[in-house]
Length: 149
Ligand code: DAT
Ligand code: MG
Image (cartoon, rainbow, N blue to C red; front, top):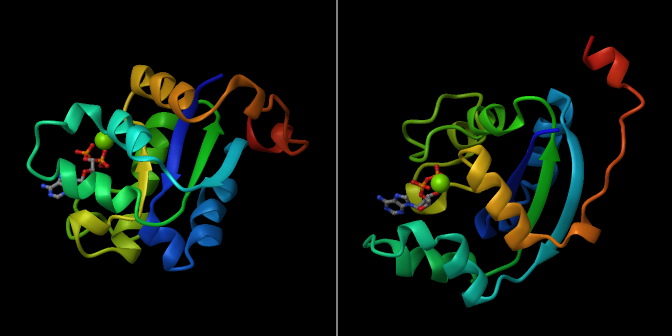
């Protein structure tokens, strides 16, 4: 079953949007299989954003992610990776559609509230970077027959 890594960034936590953000993935019908709050180490932040290492915003991005606690999650379901990206919205919140998390709550790219894996391979890499296998649960929603045929 497909899984994706989602992180509520420090701004999402500080702005009391943890419940609202989790609600959107829950209401959609995806299954939460891992959840933890943590202060991110510089090393983890740098590894997570390694693809952006050469970009001018890299240093500021790492400082931001380690500045205050985050909520890290793994969500499961058919098509969850692409669907979560739609729920999250475009990278720059000024371009994100209303109804998306970034579109509803953000105005600047450096404070865009949430991270979501962008493809199957990055999802797998990110999940194993942030969670141990023991921290991930395999379970089935009792409502599943009412969500999928
Ligand atoms: P996304 O988070 O939508 O996958 P990304 O992977 O291109 O976007 O970039 C990772 C994060 O880096 C993004 O959420 C916010 C920050 N970022 C991206 N482009 C930026 C820019 N031009 N200026 C400042 N921060 C930027
Ligand atoms: Mg990205």
